[in-house]
Image 1 (cartoon, rainbow, N blue to C red):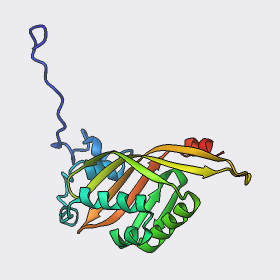
Image 2 (image 1 turned 120 degrees about the vertical axis):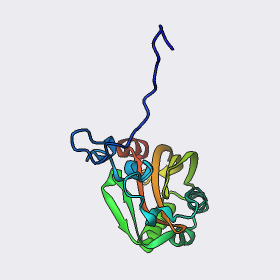
Image 3 (image 1 turned 30 degrees about the horizontal axis):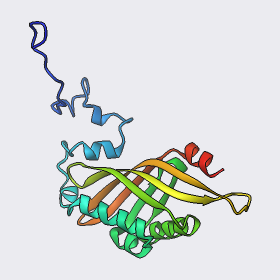
Amino acid sequence: MQGGRTTRRWKPSHRNCDDRKHPCPCRSPATSLWARTLHAGHRTGDARMSSASNPTEVAKKLYAAYDEHNHDTIRKLYCDDATHDEVSQLRTRQGAAEIALGMQKLFAWLPDIWWEVKAMVAGDHGAIAVVYIMHATAPQKNGAAKTKAISLRGVQIIEVVDGRIRRSEDYWDAATFQRQIS
């Protein structure tokens, strides 16, 4: 109680998910697929997503493979028809092989790249958000022998189905990245 009044904390309620007059915020077009997925799948109870095998362990294996520069393990962690969106670059990679090839190219360009995982936030139904800082040393664009340190914060959202990654989205600031490598 504060000042003689009862203080109630707001708790999300999904009674109005299908009410067009008072819709749940998760139905907003501005709310991403991932926010709705992390939101616990309260409307659909999607059995496909609820059959996920420990998304946190899959995410840990993915980031271990990133740090080991093991593109073969990365390929095996993704479903054959998976997608990976680099949101800041407006690029989508289709299929486990293409996703692994993209990582192989990144490892070749930045041979000392590694990820510092700051947090993993697991939602219901196979979704997990990984908050990270990517560290690397980038070669100068003009071919000089000097290098520049890179430290880039980001979030990757991963959807795991039956122990493999069905979809992932990577969010980081492209302008910050460009400033650091220029």
